[in-house]
Amino acid sequence: MLRSSSREREAGVSSAPAMTRSQFLPLLLGALVALACSDRRPEEGDLLLVTTTSVRDSGLLAALLPAFQQRTGIRPQVVAVGSGAALRMGIDGNADVLLTHAPDGERELVASGAAVSRTPIMENYFVIAGPPEDPAQVRDADSPADAIRRIAETPAPFVSRGDDSGTHRREVALLKEADLDPAGGWTGFASSGAGMGQTLQIAGERRAYVLSDLGTFLAFRERTGLVSLSEPTPSLRNVYSVLRVNPNRLEPARAKRAEQFEAFLLEADTQRRIAEFGRERFGRQLFLPLHLDPRARP
Image (cartoon, rainbow, N blue to C red; front, side, top):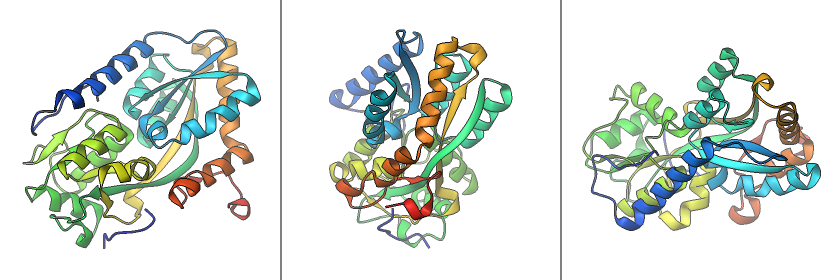
């Protein structure tokens, strides 16, 4: 059963009350920045890293990149978008390396030849979060799909990212499993078209349900007042992978830097940093590294 556990855009909002000016402007600015970044290459000496917003919004990226720059002298230029947009940037050659969490899309990118490798780096779980009062009784659901079905059958609001991100793709999979329209559309359903952090804040303001990655949920939990209502299950498993864009599409120096970044993520020291991330602030681990000897884990 789904019970509380201690483990725990592109723009527009549809099928919901209109956004306020203060809510809309940051989303518009974010979309404009991402569009501008996607049409230009970084300056010589940089690495263009296109990543999912959840890695940025959780704080993990800020915790890892200074060490990479110090060791290599490479200054990563980061573009944070949904995983679907990140994969499209890889196809278009507007990235050197990707860090995403959309396994099916990642495998398709490698199969197409646009990327030469897909290396899983770490994992955690998605969470179904909502207001503590839980009007749809998600805590009593038999499965994540049952939880989504319960939400759709009540007037309770639900905020979707709606941005083809890895989180949104998992949400669509759960909707299909629950025999619901993959586009949502029920009473109370809204699409933010935003990154994970902004979507969580909108859900918090509306006392709404939302599907989130664990790391960003915990990073925004105090601001939103939402609680996790699900337990880790296979259908909520969330794997993050690094993909190197085909070197034939890059300058040789950029291909080399992408290799260095992938190697950095696989280093034992980096894997330990991933394992330790969140413990000081949240008192718990946010990501499970996949290349660290279990005996070396903190």
